[in-house]
Length: 207
Ligand code: TYD
Image: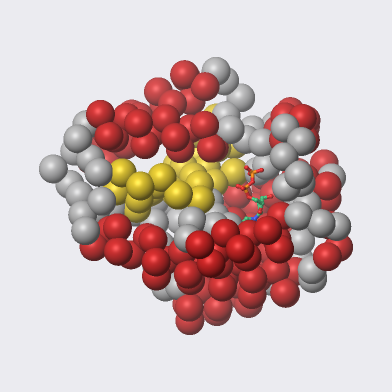
């Protein structure tokens, strides 16, 4: 059995990726894998502390440049403390968001800072997932869903619909840049249909 691999879920706010990443974790556990389900920003004690700085408060609290540094600092801790040790121990790591979110949110949608994001990634992270699912869906539906949750973590949702539309385009561009690992899944269908599509891709990849 293939072990020690890294799968990520990406998409705009409210796209349903959290539900889907959890369903995949359950499926892979049923197949006998030792699975860690984690998330960004967060996924380790230090990164969860940084998360609160990023997702709470006013939309204008940080510049895009400062956000890149904070997200990368959180990711470095997450990688050192959670992701790398788990993969080295032969576990499957499923992360709800990873570096693609920085490429799209800070590198393309908030500002055109993709080369800054890439340089910092090469210096401090230097790791890509083996497989990435981009859950694609209508930004208006997703935003309504995201805001309805009233999570108190709405800093990015508060940037509005035009921002979510830019994000969607950014994720689709990104999928075209990394065609080997990125799979775009239509999120505008029932959760069971979405998870069925994901299952098919994972089973093919595992075989
Ligand atoms: P998340 O907890 O995935 O929120 P949601 O469940 O609403 O999708 O992520 C928190 C927010 O942080 C989300 O709005 C996306 C944003 N984000 C970035 O802007 N850059 C990043 O690198 C990451 C990881 C997240």
